[in-house]
Length: 372
Image (cartoon, rainbow, N blue to C red):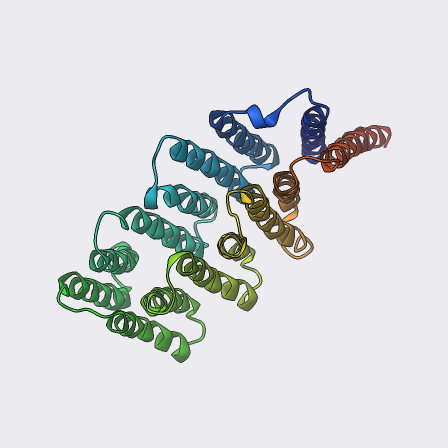
């Protein structure tokens, strides 16, 4: 019954989406006249729609919260940009919104403590991004190391028999303090070597005992941060930003391909990789102002393909829900990338047809179930 209700709900939503596109193509609605605030409400509304889908499918299906928070983050980002907020503050909402579903997943599955790792990493990256325009590089590095030390200290305080947690906690604290006091130390190479030295002990822990997979997360994360100073001496500008996004995606790709049961790793990996590709394409295209719609469409397509890849895993993982954000993002990407022409009629008809099929299928299935 719950699945049937969900099909009716999403079928009706697709019909509404197709009707909106058709209205725009027929000239009944001019989307170009919509204000920025309108799009804030549109994306916020989409987030609330997926939130309703989350409740319809059960609170334990926490994967539904990714499209919820992503759409809400997009809405908040548009609102902040329209009100003159810029700089690193703009990047904070999307990072925090990627962290929140992991916290919810841990709340429902407290034994799966591994969910706290991506949640904490995203949270730390969010606040480091916020501080990037306010403090110098040494302080950011120190805060990052202190943040890594905090979970180990919490582990020890919760169970004093786990004394081993004090070793990485103390090590990170000392290294963070050194970084904070190293104002006189300069050079990108020094910073890279310093962070590589921090990553090495965690890598050694994993190599000694392959069952301690958790050690790979800080090893890879710190090594990637250590690579950033080296990149700064080779590339700059938007190329630097694209390279950092690719670096952020690599550990999540590794986690998924090394341990396929961790399907959630594909979401941050796909988000970071999509942003990097769009940044690169934006630099290669001759006139960014005239191709902004295309770039926005490509970003949404990248996010849609990420959820589409999750949907393909539905036979082995509980990711059947991913088809809904995949369809929504893919259609939004195509509409954003192809504004105008007969394409709008095609997508309007496609959405209407898909919605009608879902609704009719749901009613036929309900009728068959009643006869049985």
